[in-house]
Amino acid sequence: MKEAFPGVKKIEYEGPESKNPLAFKHYNPDQLVEGKTMAEHLRFSVAYWHAFRNGGADQFGGSTRLMPWDDGSESVSNAQNRVRAAFEFFEKLGVGFYCFHDRDVAPEGATLAETNKNLDAVVKVLKEEQQRTDVKLLWGTACLFAHPRYMHGAATSCNADVFAFAAAQVAKAIEVTKELGGEGYVFWGGREGYKSLLNTDMGRELDHLAKFLHMAVDWKKQVGFTGQFYIEPKPKEPTKHQYDSDAAACYAFLQKYNLVEHLKLNIEANHATLAGHNFVHELEFAAANGILGSVDANRGDLLLGWDTDQFPTDLYDCTFSMLTILNMGGFTTGGLNFDAHVARESFEPVDLFHAHIGGMDTFARGLKIASAIRKDGILSDFVAKRYASWDKGIGADIESGKMSFKELSEYMLKKGESTPNESGRIEMLENIINDYI
Ligand code: XLS
Ligand code: CA
Ligand code: CA
Image (cartoon, rainbow, N blue to C red; front, top):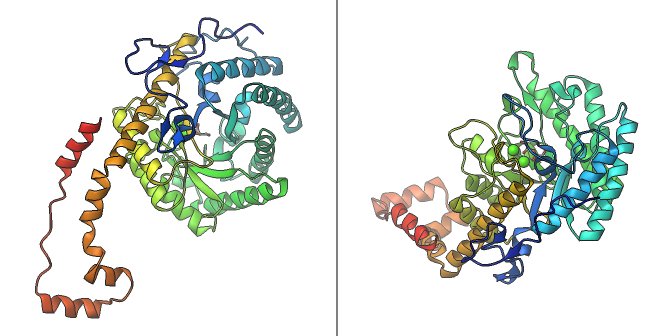
């Protein structure tokens, strides 16, 4: 096959002074930060669906992107060539990982058996390319939302046969993920939600979703897949309400159905803002409950109410998210997956490089800044001091469970008034963050 990106050489680190748009200014893969290389901290991944399947079409017009390696057909040989183009891109960009849905990489056939055969033929090439380049699979997933059969959802469909089809599809996708050495597997509830409550039995649908995930957990053991399962929260789109609406809703669901030990969360920045939260809120909630697994690194547009999946270039977001990730001890199986697409106007192949370079550099800068903040300890010292009343005396007695309302009433009746409060110093802290940025 001809080179897919003939005009682009391997992207190198040139440092902050460089003006070369096809070089990294901050992402220096081997540079050590807190004892690990940047590559080990950030674990960047390219999203196959956006980078190699999304042509830029929207409700008002068709595809604009030039993809000379793609003949536009739904053939298996075209799908195999696309894989080769994708790996050339991964290699030149210098990312360690990629992610895909089953239907991104291989075409759907007339029957499930035919579809599985198509998938096997493409997985063979994915495996060859992984071995050739050492690029790894961060996670696999199944597309349970594009085909018309999934119009009412997959695991939450009113049609039991659709549940069965989805189960068979996920069983195969987990097998394929294992075959490719995937470090994780994501469940994003494509159409698991509702458009109208008038036709919906919500309790029954949620029970079915839990049953589906338990079957997946059993299957994982059966086939010997040892990667991490993740649920990805999103509040809406394509349905009006998605059941896995945010990190807290997912955690409540996982607890109710005894699934907490089996699934962590894959937090997407754009889904957080769609849910009315900051990206870092979702990360902090997940980390505080020990279920932060992986990240879909992108950004939304706060003036638009949909999932715009833009590349992450907001330095504050990237700094705060890296602070949370460093504070929890870093990723294990997870990473930063660019679930983002180039703008419809950015239609040339080289734009794919600019987009990813920007995302990687912003997170690398965020990592360096977060690490500097941690090193100086100003934030963590402030927070520790703010809660100091809990470290001894009455606070320590409450935390250790020694106190009841009766004893606390006696304590306060004797004391008469609580110790005066201290300022939260929010503006001072915001100024301090700006000193580091
Ligand atoms: C869609 C989701 C999806 C998942 C994987 O909004 O972000 O792409 O990440 O199915
Ligand atoms: Ca996502
Ligand atoms: Ca998204």
